[in-house]
Amino acid sequence: MPIGMNFDVQSPIIPRDGVQAYGFCTRALAARGFSTVGTAEVSVEDEDSSSPMVEHPPRIKFKRPDKTARHIMNILNKEAVDKVRTERTIPDVQPGCIVQMRVQVPENKRRESTLKGIVIARRNAGIATTFRLRRLVAGVGVESVFPLYSPNIKEIKILDRKKVRRAKLYYLRDRMNALKK
Image (cartoon, rainbow, N blue to C red):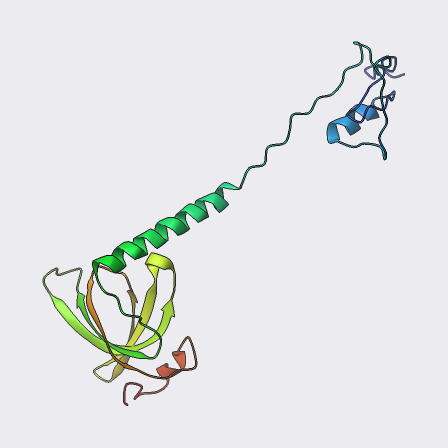
């Protein structure tokens, strides 16, 4: 036997399934949880104090932290939406709605501007729900994205609801008179 290769073959190794084996490979297999097919019974006489019985602690299952955090964030998101909805009325803004909004400009706190346009898209994301408003400014089409639950939006009035068959009305970008009835 080469120097440094000292294997203890005299003492039997009893893995978790109770089958005695001799050799170095059995320790690795017992540590990995391999067992033979069938159940072998080990009597009390076969067990002696010199042979170590490998005891594995029970496996504790944990949820991944990102899954539990996502669940908590969903609950907080719903609570925030409910809080905003109790404070003020927010209409059901859907694509195809022609809306008029009073928006407070964040740069100048006192100034409020009135915007009128058609909603061409809505992105549902809880408290971060946004909608895309398309309007004409000096004959040029301008699109703006507004958070639905933003405190800067003071009022939303739905003037008309167009019957649409799409969730995203991006094809209105090519048409000039999308607001005409």
